[in-house]
Length: 197
Image (cartoon, rainbow, N blue to C red; front, top):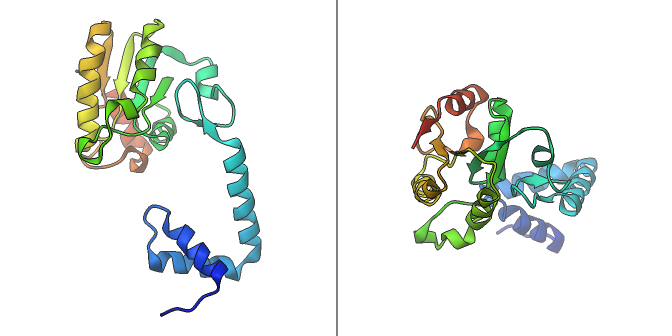
């Protein structure tokens, strides 16, 4: 059994809370940080700054330092809203430079088995945005997973009565993959080849 100081044990515990970080990875990261005190200071400063300054946009629920975010406040086409599950999905689409409209981040996907219902997502806020008028198309860019497909189907049924165009990203993105890991060229083809639902 590894005997460590209380502060190192605490660091290992915090690192293991990160997604994809187990015992071995936490140890590797901790010892890397211990070997370079300058990196520890820079990391601590960055984490403190992010914690103090970054928040969710009150319009689209993407991450931002300014509220509303630059996309919502800018000159982009507000008549098209692209609905994504998470902020990192929005960033993946932005990297493709294929979409010039606005976004709406649901903050997750429907998952009855995990207890995630429509009330726990930003679906009500999306409906309120649409009720304000001016939107002609909603692009459903949820992940091509069971939860993402269920969310897209739920939203399609919910949005049809609004009389606007509801589209889905083209299936150039492999099934079971998260949007944040898709390369820019594939993302661009998916956005440009979206289809009517």
